[in-house]
Image 1 (cartoon, rainbow, N blue to C red):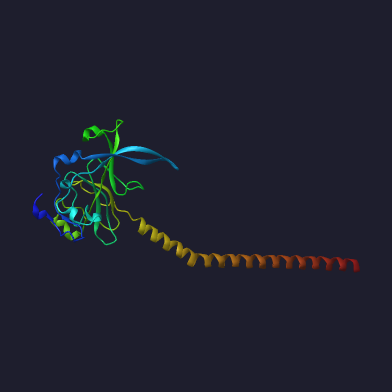
Image 2 (tube, helix red, strand yellow):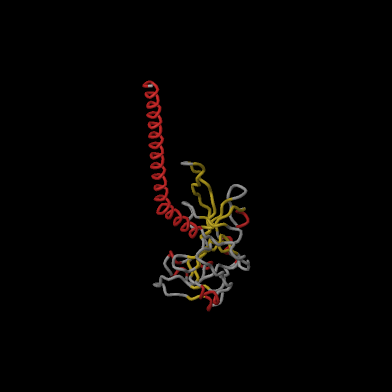
Length: 249
C-alpha cells in the first residue's frame, strides 16, 4: 500500500486512521488462526462448549500505525475503505450524517450477538487455513473493520463508495456492484410517522364526531319513544271516550 494512501498518527492521537485505498495484507496473514472454545446457545438456558478458530494475526497484518492508537480505534477508519477482496456489510447512515459499514473477508457474514459483537464468521474447513480442529467444519471468526465516509470523501476513495440516504440500509455490498434505484430504501420511519399522525387525527376529530352521533341517536330514540307513547295514550283515551259515549246513549 502506498504511503500517501494512509496517514499515520502520533501514539497519543485517538482519532481513527485514514485509508483511501484497499489495504493488502501479507500472504501469510491468512493462516494466523488460534483455536479456542466458546459456549454457544443451543436452547433457552442451555449452551454447548464448542471449539472455534479466532483470527489473531501479527501487527504486520494491519495497516501501519493501527497499534499506535487506542484499542477501540485500531480497526476504525475515517474516511476508509475495506481491505482488498473484502465485502461491505450493514451499510447505513449514522446519526452524524456520515455513512458507515463493517468490513468482512469474502464469503463471510457479519455477526452481532451476545457472544460476537461486530465479528465476521463462517463455517469452513480449518485445515484449509493451517489449523486443526475436530470435525469437518468449524466456525471461524475475525473482528470486523469499521469504515466511515462522507459524501465529500467519495472522490478521494478507491473504490468510490455508494452515496447513501437516511432511509437506506444495505446488508451487503461488493465493490463494483450496481445499486438499483430504490431497492434498499427503507421508509418505515416515514410510514410510521404518517400512521401516527393518522391515528392522532382519528382521536382528535373522529372521536368527538362519533360521540356526537351517539348522543343524537340516543336523543332521537328517546324522542321517538316519547312520541309513540304519547300517541298510544291519545288513542287509548279516544277509545275510552267512544266507549263512554255508547254507554250513555
